[in-house]
Length: 338
Ligand code: NAD
Ligand code: UFG
Image (tube, rainbow, N blue to C red; front, side, top):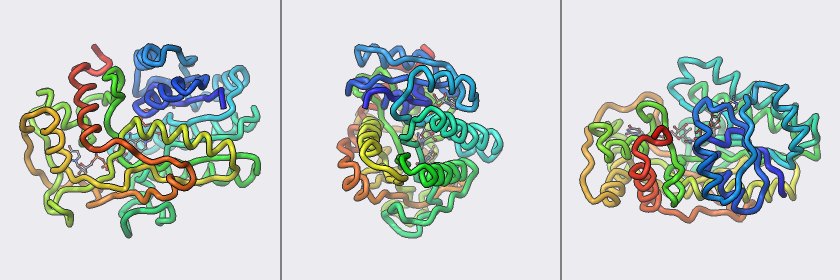
């Protein structure tokens, strides 16, 4: 595999994956409209990799630009990260989510097919499972998303499945990420959410950096070890490697396969907070608040399919996740904005 089109290559997961692809010797073209990122990210990726990806500013909903890129770059595979991902915002602006995530993917698949590109790795999410009916959650768990964002992911999974069914040479891997956190060990790239972070780890990092006053813990009365929500956090560098393994798999198979990407181990909010405190060597202020609507008590991945089909497993632990997040946060107090 050499030429990989990466949509959303300037985003959090896309930038880490682009770095790993470049380091592995692939030719990469990043296609991003910078709706939630900046081109500075790719400048840093190039500096870290010692060589640059090709960069095109474009929207996956813009078929003309996409077709021009497909015709010129002639990718052997696409890794499709581009899309909107904020659950709360998706409730307020559902059509924008259906447009970017669903129509955007449909456009992309049409363009791929027209240009003979038959392999795709898609960023799906554990959110497609909704409330866990059993744990750990395997890939055969019912799909029952509880918000518009999750529904876009479930619809896209279905569309890609149908596309593969209709084109027997096509091959797709739907990677269902659990909770990606952490940053590249260099501290040069990381997660840089706009405004106040909605997710736990970026929020803790900003409290630790004195940019926010205290963490609000959303509920301590769940049926978990300590009453706080439990999640399967996965280091973004492990997640990046999972994409490389998925590409290899897509090259030697056909059909559509959904695969969980997690560690199989969970951490509660209090455990994550303690781990971060251990990293920075001081206490992090918090207060317990009511539960956040739509949250589930526990989410844990069954990881056997990733191990057996991709030969991939996570290596980084919670301490690595906290240390790399803190390294990124302290080297870049204003994210990419500095
Ligand atoms: P991100 O917002 O950092 O990256 C997405 C990138 O896509 C951004 O650079 C953005 O500018 C770009 N983009 C958005 N809409 C676009 C469009 N219409 N055309 C072209 N580019 C567009 O998000 P991320 O955390 O890197 O997530 C990447 C993918 O993984 C997303 O599809 C997301 O839904 C999925 N995912 C993320 C998580 C998570 O917690 N980070 C969990 C599960 C799944
Ligand atoms: N939490 C807090 N305080 C905060 C933020 C979060 O206590 O300020 C708690 C939540 O209640 C939950 C845990 O921390 O128990 C993790 O919450 P996140 O918001 O970090 O992550 P979620 O599991 O809610 O959701 C994330 C992404 C979704 C994705 C899902 C599964 O936001 O888009 O992981 O991949 F679908």
